Amino acid sequence: MIANDLAAKIASGELAPGVRLPTENALAKHYAVNRHTVRRSIQRLVMEDLVQVTQGRGSFVRRPLINIDYSSDIYAPSDVNIELAKRGHGHENPVRIEPATAQMAKALQIKISDPMAVIDFVVRSADEEVLALISRTMPLKRMPGILDAFRETQNLPKALERMNIRQIKRKWVRMRARAATADERAALAISAHTPLLIVGCLFVSVHGDPVFHDCSLFASDKVEVYSHAQLG
Image (cartoon, rainbow, N blue to C red; front, side, top):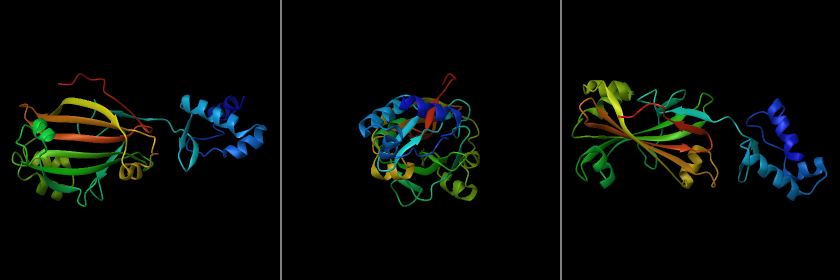
């Protein structure tokens, strides 16, 4: 009865998306039941994707998931804003040079420890909610002026055009999940129980040469990632 009543209020808009539900004690008093009954009712709403519980903050009416379409836009997910991070993801500088790891060397077809240009971005929704942390990694020997071009334009597509790279496509997309670190949870405003959705993409030129690797860390409780186009 409690779950059905709260679900009806959510459906009618009386409890709007993002609104914090009353505390368990308040709900128990309102419905004249014990807290255990309230907790089971809230858990049912969580299972129905109507409510989200954030540790230390309470229970909130879940906002609709934001659709991230990986087939319509080669540079950034659709219907969101992408901007340069104020600080790097785990680094002081969001625009930097790093030696290639074995994994990145394989993806970018370079040697281990070859220099890579790395640029960190933040993806935000229209209401400024942080949805993802992005790192885009490029082979510096293949594009020696890419960081200077980016600093001048503050726009990666325009910077790539200065490198005479005007057409790129995704070669592959790979997804997995893992637990978020404390810094990632703080940046994405997610709870300790919310996993990260990690989406890795490799972009190549029309000749098939790797241009950059894109690694996006999504708040899995805020987005739905999909692709409906055939990848090359």
